[in-house]
Image 1 (spheres, one colour):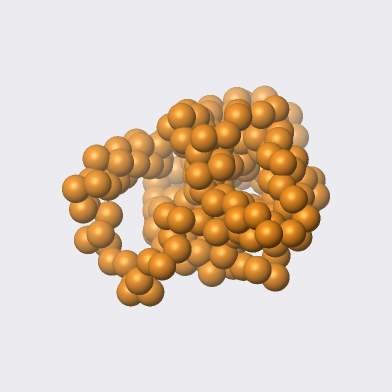
Image 2: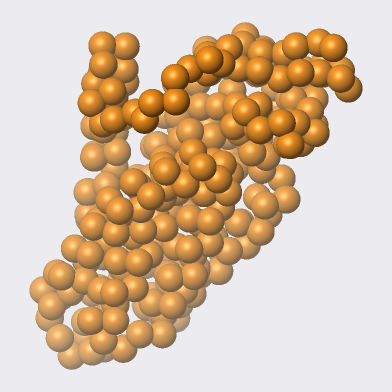
Length: 271
């Protein structure tokens, strides 16, 4: 029986076309995350005249989104560790898609704020899992590029949201923005459910899913025998003690933590 260290094989392996396709898939989820995150700020100038109120009346409704995203970011990371990055990512996409679609049918600022908050939970949960998947799909030398590409898709989505508002809302109304913003992520989620695999590193620790892992590794261009035994040396024998927030600022992780915090902060400012 051959033993394969999944982490080492992926870190030193080739950068294949299949892996590039997977990064495109994760990046698309974050573009849609950015779009749905910025639809409401761009729709307010069209909603306010229809409802006969001032733009300032939407201040609280706009503010609920970031609070939901904060909670979603925490929950998304926990669910990603327990249920798998793919499951948590696609669940987040479906959640924010359904809630964004629901906004198209509201008629009050209060209902708008409630849905915006709940949608924010899904929006926040998508980002950490997309970044984790992107980093765990690729070799070590391509990891910074994959994670950076995923993160920069957030402001790209905001740009697309502004363009959609200027093109769609004047002709079809502001509700059409949220209908499109809900249906497109639902369609993408269904597509990615078919083609996006779970993180190989996550699968390596679950023997009952090794058959799935064999298929993923082979598609990534690695020769995996039928009787393989998977391990990941970086985690093998690691203590079961729970990690803390302080661990993110340990010397080995401090620079990356501050860099990621800064990147997410800069891409989450409201327009």
